[in-house]
Length: 459
Image 1 (cartoon, one colour):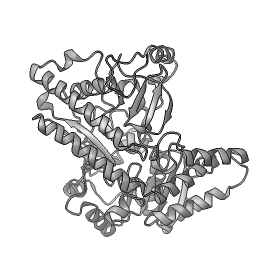
Image 2 (cartoon, rainbow, N blue to C red):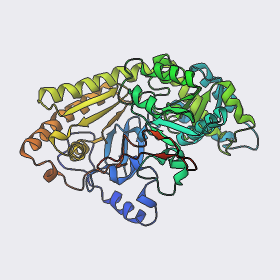
Image 3 (tube, rainbow, N blue to C red):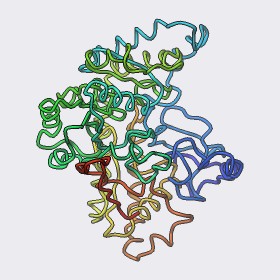
Image 4 (cartoon, rainbow, N blue to C red):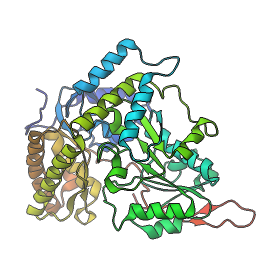
């Protein structure tokens, strides 16, 4: 009998998942379209690899096992799987068509809704993926300023300008790598060190798991204003979830350009670029950013319904309240057990469980927690990406599972048996190089292109 969201006596059987994965090996590179969904992010031999359906905050794998999902499709499901109002909007639009030979009214209607909600959204452009709009923002910034270099913080997609600063930069020309540099969040000194007269834009996730300190975002705004640099907020995670107007509304700092995806259409593929008219209007002629599927109507219908639900039901406040309960509960369990090496951090709507290496390799600790949560019917990869469909009962089950699992983990740490208790290979890092790299432009020598300092961290 398949496992349920319960304290199951055995680990789930995943024979069908394994069979499908075997068919994918050699056919699909890395066997996945999204690294965060791939087998490398789960304990091999324990966690499922393929999900067949979802409802609310529950998913069922191809072997019939049920899980309480805290990944929620890696962020897009702000309301939940198969959410009735959104699915009905998609079905209704499907009767009329999906993609047309001319523009569709939904393009205007959804753009107007975004303008109503998002500070500084004077113009709006739609696309399909987050990296579409972050890359468009970088191109616009370069066109607007006449400069070349980018200073970034956070994850911004697979396109050349960003992925060049990771260890997965194969195929990116060195000339491109020499134009992107990074800074550390809440560290104005690293920002100032990274700027020069050729900096076109500063792009960052305005908040990830660490809240801004010492008016950090406002300081960025002032520095960019003083130096004529375009400030870009990558609001893939914060948009419409932290606040209906995103981090800009929550912290009272308006960027020149802001990029959104994930929560906006509850799982349908849609991304949004917004910002100042004098920059955005360059898309009308000078900067080419057009795509066949930008006006695809099913996603726009889903976005209209999603934005209405988020607004009418006060979803950001609900996520904050439930997320705080979960975060506080996890931290209290760790404190009660004396586990000072485990913390739940981040904003309530999206938290992360971290492990200090003083207790052992963090990925091993995380893997054991994941393995045991999976046994108890919880799909987890370190995050709590909450949706409106997560209920108090779901949180009760999760916290009860954490009590058991943390006690097991702490005992394993004390006995130095964490790795021995894993039933398969532990989870893998996505990037081996994660911070303090390409941190400062180096003045070019006469007759030579710019160079950069590369800093690498151990895996």
